[in-house]
Image 1 (cartoon, rainbow, N blue to C red):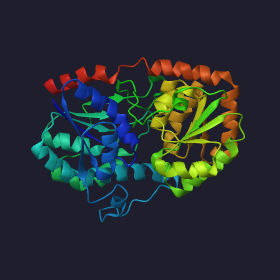
Image 2: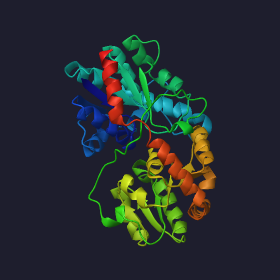
Image 3: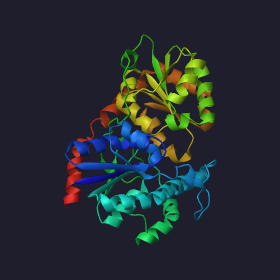
Image 4: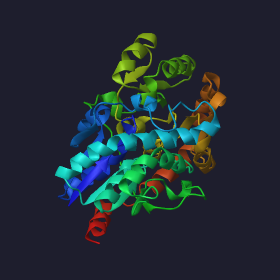
Amino acid sequence: MKVLFIAAGTSPAGVFALAPLATAVRNAGHEILVASFDELTSSIESVGLPPVAVVTEHTTESIKQLDRPGGPIEFPWSPDQELPYVGRWFGRQAAVSLDGLLELTRHWRPDLVIGGTDAHAAGLIAAHLGVPHVRQAWDWLHFGGAEQYAAEELAPELERLGLAELPAPDVFLDICPPSLLPSFATPGRPMRWVPGNRQRALEPWMYAKGERPRICVTYGSFRTAMPQIFEHLCALLTRLVDLDAEIVVAANEAATEKLRERFPQVRAGWVPLEFLLRTCDGIVHSGGLTALNAMSAGIPQVVLNQFVAFEPSLALLQQQGSAVVLHREEGSPDGTFEACRKVLSDGSYGQQARVLADELNSLPTPNDVVKDLEGLVRG
């Protein structure tokens, strides 16, 4: 069968989340392509998958200013703007992708279309072609309410395709550990999260524990590139170096050189987290796919959260006992320092992290799921 994967968003994390299933499908003998905005093609290449740029004249940032109904899309500076922002931005990505996807599938017609959580173009093109559509969760976070804004943004495209609403997927693959599923969320077909990160030549320190406890800090490649986020990271490191621990910052190449100059006592660089985290005693991060890396490695987490929409999922993680969650101002350098000291000194966080790792790693693998996808196509 021929399977079209659609990666949306600006962060490589959206590609890394889809990579294990795409690889499993290809390893089972099927043809795959991964469609995206041009800005993500290098990330797709980096994990050994075949990219097709279906949007080349716009970026995911530039489309926010397009002359479309609803006007510009602005960053959510208050909680009531979060869901409209997510829905409209990802809806607009689907809208801008549609012509390129129609042209691609005119020459390469898939039997199945798979998209990430908010890759609404997957449902649109699958409905147009009359083939099954699978949604795979990008991460473990669950929140509802953004779809109505995506549908509003996509109203012209829905009318163009003769659709009354956003198509629901035939199958939803959920990589969230079942114990962290909020009561309002609809359960999907569970699938084990497997790392799909970009790789590099490993150095011994990346896979071997040192003499001191080790804390990893990462804000993600996309976020770290923002000047205000980078300065917040530096303020945090200024405080964390007072811990009796080795600090490792997982960051993109652009930030690494500046970090090494300002903090020579800190290790910094791009490191595949599936190796690094197994040598760590904790991680500081801002949520999403990084949390799954930590869950799989069985280490405690300190999560710095900025968004109200994520709070139900994060409350369950904190209640499970493997993480400290700091919301907005709580995630100050001092607050984060105290949280790190807490997870390093209280052994219960490590115990609960190993419990969560066992749950996550017991779920069906992407290889197991491929047979379900084959059956979906056969009908």
